[in-house]
Image 1: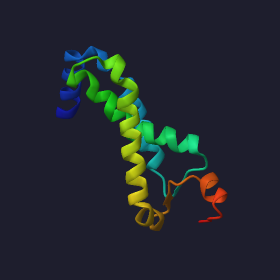
Image 2: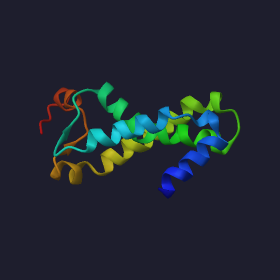
Image 3: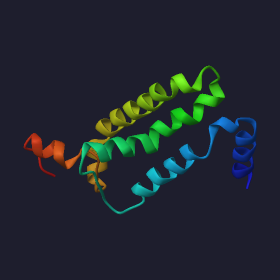
Length: 114
């Protein structure tokens, strides 16, 4: 379809973009395609945040120019940070939908349960 063609053209123009960030993002989206969602550990939360938002930073690097290698870690960190803010902002609404992204280990450490 048109979206696939546009992505293929973008990958042709920017071969350094690579496929991995797209695959990682799809994995993050799939992890949300369930009736309820719970995160157990901080490591799991960090992986989720990378997949759904850190990947966006990686996808933008070749398009923005500059030195992608030097900007890789900051781009991922910014995406993760934005996702964590989003999770905190939407915590009540997400919980009502059966989605709790604050890790169980963090809640337990602070005496909070679901």
